[in-house]
Length: 495
Image 1 (spheres, rainbow, N blue to C red):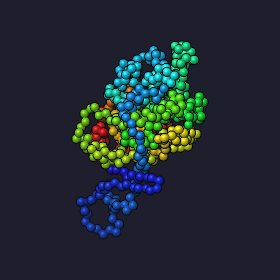
Image 2 (cartoon, rainbow, N blue to C red):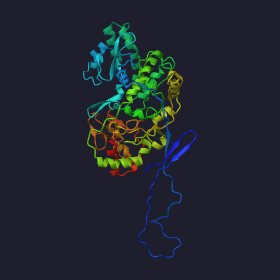
Image 3 (cartoon, rainbow, N blue to C red):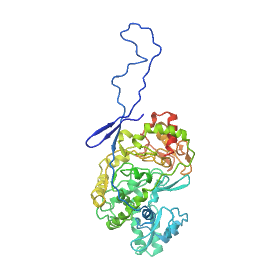
Image 4 (tube, rainbow, N blue to C red):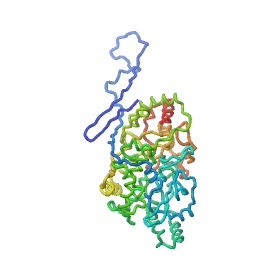
């Protein structure tokens, strides 16, 4: 049964009530009449004239945002081979230290054809060829041995300090190129500074979650909001606490009016993409150069489609599940098929009940948050042409579900290993671990095979008792029967 949805806006509150079928009881065994001024209605009580109100789901409809047009082919080339990260390890040193990779999963040419897909060789401003990370570090992955651009990485390990090896790397580059006055060192130096800044501040408690929000906060703490130039000393102190996120699939963006699980990215999406350049950006002029290309990148992302479920689907059972979905889930997550629709709802924390820490981090005032909001909204990002706007109203977006079978683990913090556990909150494990083998897939529960643990064993154990790692909330599936959940899971495989 659908929950009533309360759609809130600044000036008006609109309640959308859905049809509820009320079942009444009858008694076929009528007893002979006996005078009794107070009949016993224990088994068949009179209807309550004032029944308790049906719980409501409080939502805000996020308005559409006008986006720039671009060329998808140009966008793909820039995304995979462009210099939006313009400082890095000198090319020869990278090959010596890390080795090559001839798989060439992205179909690149030249010296990019022989390095891993999540790195890009570019020419630094001073003419030195360097290798730096690209967007595929987080936004590409494998499932069932299929490499998929746009699938959020589900196995990256951020449990280590990524600056741990920087001293060794410094020594190697200094030795290979004749000290810290070389052109190679100059081309490497900003990359070094960025890694030193983010390394100790972005350590997660478990493998497979992402500290993207914290990486951004650390980097903007070191940059002037107007000139975007780097300061070795941060403008605001950043603590070591990391609230984890999952990485949403890129193919969902074409439906969304706001970016990120907490929906804070409003206005121009392309400006948000420049966040990938904050690690090595030289100044505002470079940001403007990158900005000109991001409309093409967005055009490419808009071409992405979800992968089809690779295993057998029971079509009859899926049809049953579709009926259940449309009566229980579609009001928030949209409709699919020949007449798709998506409402773009931000759901309040009170209604969805999932771990609040990521949302609270932006909606509650703190020195870090106040600096962050001001930096984006009143600096270059928020005042230049096609501005980005950071808006924190609290809550989480009810996302589109296209390709949901491929995007485990679930929830904004990757705390639930399968869709079956999403639909039955009582089955969710408190501690769980998985193999991180992209073929270790549970076709029945739709998600990763996992082992329930009694406590945290190692970095591969997800501990839902930690701050920001909770798996509570979204209990809407608890009302379904087991057979209804089974049918619903079968339908979700088809999206």
